[in-house]
Image 1 (cartoon, one colour):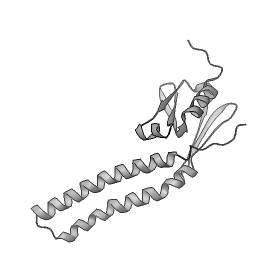
Image 2 (cartoon, one colour):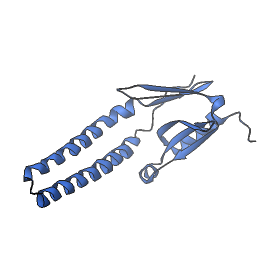
Image 3 (cartoon, one colour):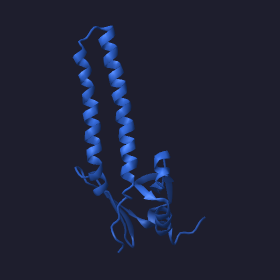
Image 4 (cartoon, helix red, strand yellow):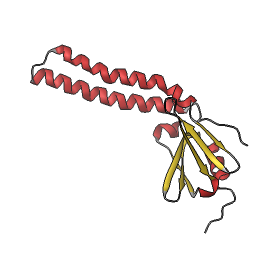
Length: 153
């Protein structure tokens, strides 16, 4: 039985950039809307303080990323690929190796900078799971392990 693996720790940089980008955009839109209301409707200036709400959610999201990484695991057994993630609500997916039809690699600009890809596993017409933040070299070996013994039609 193979050992339990986690995404590469560098995926934390990618996730942080995604959280900062997402919540930064939400914060700017919220601030612009609140300032617009202050000027057009005449709301008091303290209403701009409501922009702290998306700021707090962004900080909370950043602080939980380490837990997200810690609880993301995958393992290849002789018969299956087992993926497990979630610290609050734990999700576990087991996919029989015989059912896997193809594997895709996805990588955004920040992921490419750190040589990381998301490994997307497909069965008959369905995406059954994604393993985030795997180094390209490991992802290629993972694809070989998952697809070994298959013959192209």
